[in-house]
Amino acid sequence: MLTRTGNFPVGFRPGWAAWQKDLPALTQWAKNAGFEAIDLETLQAEDLNILRAAGLKLGTVDLIDFGQLMQNEAQARQKLIAQNVAYVKQAAAWGAKTFFACMIPGDPGKKRAENYALAVESFAPIAAACAAEGASLAIEGWPGPAPYYPALCCTPETCRMLIRDLGPGMGLNYDPSHLIRLGVDHIRFLREFLPHIRHVHAKDTELLPEAAYEYGMYQGSPQAQPVRFGELVWRYTIPGSGQTRWRAAFKILREGGYRGAVSVELEDADFNGTPEGEKAGFEHSLAFLRGA
Image 1 (cartoon, rainbow, N blue to C red):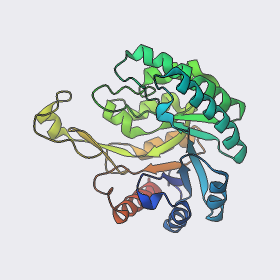
Image 2: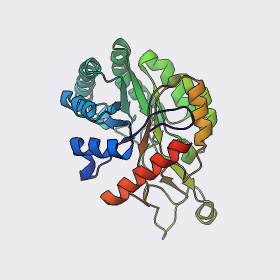
Image 3: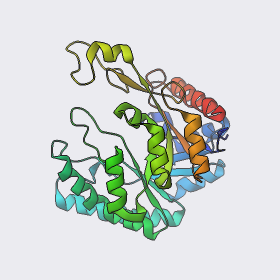
């Protein structure tokens, strides 16, 4: 089923729950629910046959162990980079064109400039392999965990720098939920980086103003506990339950020529935790996106 604005196919990114790991069963459920695409982790040749048998499209595929691509040990890092370069070539030959990752430093306490240099070193060969195969990276701007929030490619500044330094194989995953929690205007960001958007995540963020009044933005609390899939003053939600201006975003994507899928990434304390709740979360997300 398609979004109302832009006619984008709606898919989803499988999570960590056991029922979402059984790809044949998952694809049948997805097709019956009305989804048109699924993102995958490490791609195997038989996975594409399973998707095709269910009439589903392939969204993104993850780079191999992308959380370790910026690890501190140089020899292990170079081995994993080479493994991913070979993987991009093989997966692209099978039909994968968009490779998902986050840029997560092995040492979050290092200066950001040092970790930026390591991100370029680690991802440049993979971006070049993508470009050579007519494919692209799709880097998600997840900021990483407290207290450092060390991940790269999250803000307009570092996105511009990485597009410049990694070249034509570099692309972005547009996930407004991360921009909203960072205080970045998600619509302005989309307008600026539209030519580099290779994939879209449908996840939202609800801001919690009463909590912001009570605790402020930075100091935390000696007694209150963060919301699951969030912190004290914000939480991730299904699309439509947060601050994202979805219809405006889809209009910009349509007018800019985006032709990819919109993939629900389910991280919402109201739904995650049981198969029934997670299926309901996906279905509610699909229903909202169809009308957006």
